Length: 117
Image (cartoon, rainbow, N blue to C red; front, side, top):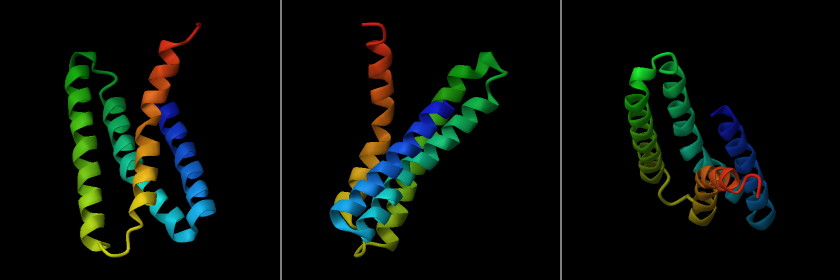
């Protein structure tokens, strides 16, 4: 779990650096903010799963609660950002950072599926 979080942080820094190279500092900041809108709720989900690791009878409930928490926190962060910084958001960079960080999990699962082939 922590490996995925660290991989997401690396992808976030690469996305922000790429946005800085392509569009400048403002785009880099918004790419980082977009990635953090997914990375921070993911960290909360990992924390919930870690807290319930010693209680295997509640593993399913912890997973569902953690995923629900991730969705609600990510949406709340995005809505708050859109409400507060409506005119200032560099939306393509924000979306690129968000998508880059959120799709790291799919790449990890794809690598596991293809492991050994």
